[in-house]
Length: 284
Ligand code: AMP
Ligand code: ZN
Ligand code: FE
Ligand code: FE
Image (cartoon, rainbow, N blue to C red; front, side, top):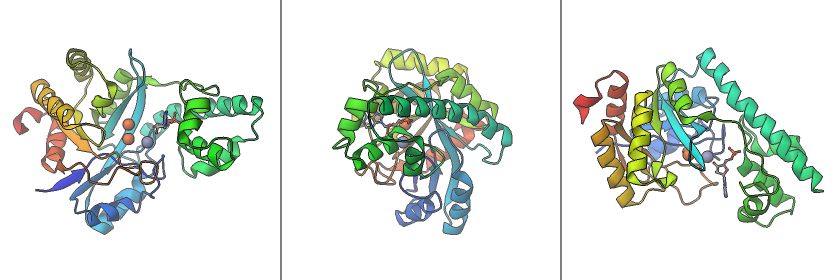
């Protein structure tokens, strides 16, 4: 069986491996295709796709967009097969990037007002890529000796209940799905198991997203147990959505997650491609 991984992160967002290295690691792991799905950015896609050519592995252009819906927490929407060079697509992503830098500035001001010696430049330097996120800030707070570990950094300061937390403006999930579709890409609901919704609520949510162009559901994911995976696969078939899967590999920020684990069959990529050309029903 061909094995693939449709959910990975690089240094362009919060992963620890450069986008040009991931294809070689995937080849080494015996995979036949890999998608790069960095948070809110396509900055890593060009080096990633050329490395895929070099490594002789199928590369899939992807993204993972954080969105908001009526329940607590973030809803992540994956997008596949966009053109990474599309200037309009990049332009629209700037909205998300601006929302992030506004939020980051406010968080730094809050930390400074608590008497912590920290600057936005230090945070950007710690991140090193286009996306400057809270995991990088947590690392910086640990390096500075302000916190002992990630748990304390998020718990006390920068998690949703932390004293320096500032929420960032986001698209709604429907807007994120439509945005991806608008650029002829395939929107997929990421790791629905993490949303902790009951089956009926999840089904209604998926139906509403499907009405707005959703192409697939991420059934296989490193945070899904077997029961969740089976339930999601059944739901995908019932709603005629393409099942997808990936590890959500980040490298050192998520040391327990390995590239290509859990196993995802290569046929899922064919199903996702077919969903774009409107022939999804024929494939499963
Ligand atoms: P940001 O996009 O900058 O708001 O950062 C979001 C990222 O922070 C998530 O993708 C997680 O990787 C991480 N994160 C959020 N909450 C926690 C937490 N309580 N503990 C550890 N990591 C977290
Ligand atoms: Zn991440
Ligand atoms: Fe996610
Ligand atoms: Fe992810």
